[in-house]
Image (cartoon, rainbow, N blue to C red):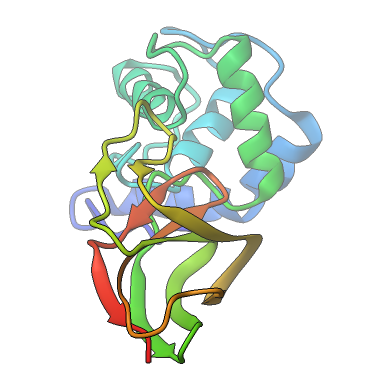
Amino acid sequence: MKKLTQYVSKKTSALLIVGLALSTGFAGAQTAGFTRDLDLGSRGADVSRLQTLLATDTNVYPQALVTGYFGGLSKAAVEQFQAGYGIPVVGRVGPMTRARLNTVALSFTGVDSHAPAISSVNISVSQNNATIAWNTNELTRSKVYYDSNAIYMTEAAGQMMEPGVSGSVAQDTTLNMSHSMTIPNLQSGRLYQYVIVSVDAQGNASMTMPATFTTQ
């Protein structure tokens, strides 16, 4: 869950409300769920739960106001949520958005539009193998693309989709923060390029620029 850090000086009271709501908001969303369409002018406890959930990511709802009233700020936050999760950006909560909100609420992780950070990359090589290790700041599944030729990358085709990378791939589909991938059956004395791609549970992806290693 992201810590609310923006607007503290101007909206302290609102943040206190959010802080209290966050302690119970996910449990409420889990038991009650989002069961009706929400749009400009909607009021009620489910609007408060919506605002509480969206406020867990300051990129989505920086104002972090939990009022129980669906106004312009809530509409803008819903649009950010929809864009981040690959849902048509309509600014209202309909069936598709309700389904995603309920999935996020049940996960107890909060809204997440932040790509994971890749750090501490380390590589060890032998004659025919290379082991690449790295860390991420959140749970991710990961891939290592590698090739003895130049690696080419293309932008993701849409929201919550991975970028395209050429070459062979080794992957681990389990969610971890500490990663280690061994690439077998390499040619000895050969220069290889590699790219790391890590994707969190919400589909946010990060990738490294191509780097190289040489087998022994």
